[in-house]
Amino acid sequence: MSVYLKEFSTHSEYEAYIASEGKVLPNVSICTTESDVHYNPWVETRVVAKFNVTDTSNPIRIASGTSNIESIEIDGVTQPSVTTGYTFETTGEHIVKYTFINPKKIAGKTFPYCGDNLIEVQIPDIVESIEYYAFFNDYGLTKVTMPKNLLNIGYYAFASCNLESVEIPDGTKSIGDWAFNFCDSLTSVTIPDSVTSIGKCVFEYCSGLTSCTIGSGLTSIGREDFAYCYGLSELTIKEGVETIGQNSFSYCTGLTSINIPDSVTSIEMYAFGNCKSATNLSIGSGVTSIGDGAFRNCSGLTSATITAVNPPTLGTDTFTSTNNCPIYVPSGSVDAYKAASGWSDYASRIQAIIE
Image (tube, one colour):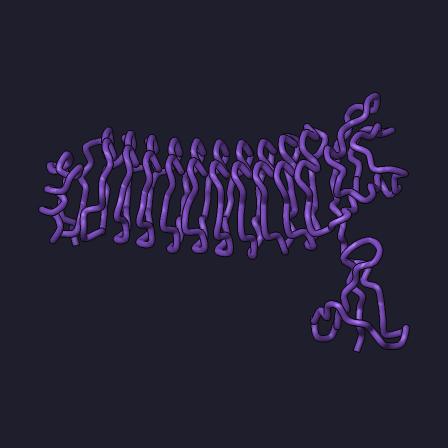
């Protein structure tokens, strides 16, 4: 049996790893012959960043916060001290590697404001938390390799970056407010079933986003999470989501169809307001309340179908400027809908679902 030492920092913290069984043995003493124990050199515990340098006359920012940085290696040379700025001798691409004091997190405000010089980041699998403002306003950053063991993404972590894609790992639990806000180049995102909490405005103003899948572990979509994602045309909300928050998808003018699953009980005010390209709306059977203006100015609608037997509580102006489209409800509930508060304003449009 071969036992490998799996490194989790640059100097002292190790775990035993039984290669033949794929098993990690934490906090153990290894008693074996020297020939049976090997250091595994393939476990990278450092953050690896690629910088594109166009100016060698002035230092460029390679870090903003250094409280968690133990050492920095630039183009294979370990630097004598940890610094936030560095003057490169040549233009072109350069590799910078960071060793953290606590390798399981990228501390808050470690890399913000690196401008257009920071273009790519590889985050090792040991990292569990990417904290607040970690890469904020790194507008040259187009590619990030996320760690497989990531649990949390902090607020504003990647806001105003130029990411073209992002893969949120299975196992991630939470995403903070504004985490990917103003990532204009982001085209697709999948929020895995493991995510149980997201903040507000997480993907707001991601104008290039075209497709999004929201996993079943999330019970509430936060306020303005996808507002002003003008290019969003494919939206999948899995069963499990219960609340669609205020303005969550307002001004998603690329949506052509809105499908809300049976698990959703509450659609808050202006949730889908001004989704002008949507032609079809389907609301599941679990809905109990629909807020003010939830579908206001969805002027392209040709039909709206609601399968809830009991009329949900309805806010004001919910279906104002929706092309006078028919509103289909269960055949046995037509009269109840026509008589219900708020729904009576749309009585002439309410019809039985055609089986």
